Image (cartoon, rainbow, N blue to C red):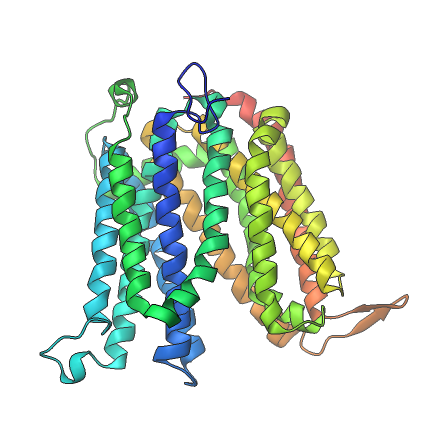
Length: 446
């Protein structure tokens, strides 16, 4: 099979235009991982080493990145649906992101400013600049992501969309494996300026690559977008469409249930490694690498799995497998066994992501894709944040000191919480199976 195919004979990278879109996606994601990891290490090791508020500052980065998904995401969805040329939206978003990253260099004191005492701003101003840039970059990303989904829909025929989603997931997994390990050595060897330059360059390179994508004229000619009726009114119209779609409601609800559990898992897993698995906190990073490796393999295989089983069966089936894996993980006491389970879990996460994208594209008309993305992403993000808070509350207060033994099996707070996470995934899978079997047949492709 050819690497880059044509409309009639798809290749490994589907077709020329998707290959360019895929390359742009990979470049920007790699830059993002280098950027995010650099900021965390930079704050913890150089800007605030030994400070009592350093963990709070790192948490502030996560909050600055997450808040725009909830606040800007819904409005961005409306705006993206209004703008007919999604390719131009992506190019402008990439360029603005690159310029924003470059603006952080003098603001954060990386480049000396002669008119400031000592050549740079105070520490509080540096941190404020970092948080501000992270917030704005995340806000811009809310326009970039739905535009990319619409563009993918325009240039990839429906039968090849699971394959395309799998390739995007694979590039994200490769970036996850390469970016964070690359960031720390770059920071300590060359300073934070290099990480910022790499991230900015990745956005500019992505803009150049996306500019070369050719959008079929029929994609925009066939779109009948009414005259703008106001952001709030269009948002309400989008929410009504979302609420009337059984498939969209089912996906959002089942993923919300699952992400509620995953939020707790992500917040408490480092404690599980030290307390239940009896390993060191440093080895926690090995589990992250195992998950990244599993996500890469899963992304490469998920397209074929979805094509064979169907998108609906792949979605709820893999959610169920995820629940079983987490239930098994909750009872582990061996770190090598945990590596194997997390690797399989990474494969399952990729398969879910690969199935969700084509499902959304299939049941959502082009003119509603931005608003659908601007609805489902904040819901999932909110569920994840709630899960983080609930997990911390359960472990830190409600189940503090909890110990129980049943038939020689010891039960503690973390394995109890993780058992609840696995159960939540099974509930999400059962809900999806029940509702997707018939709902998808009732909704015709746009």
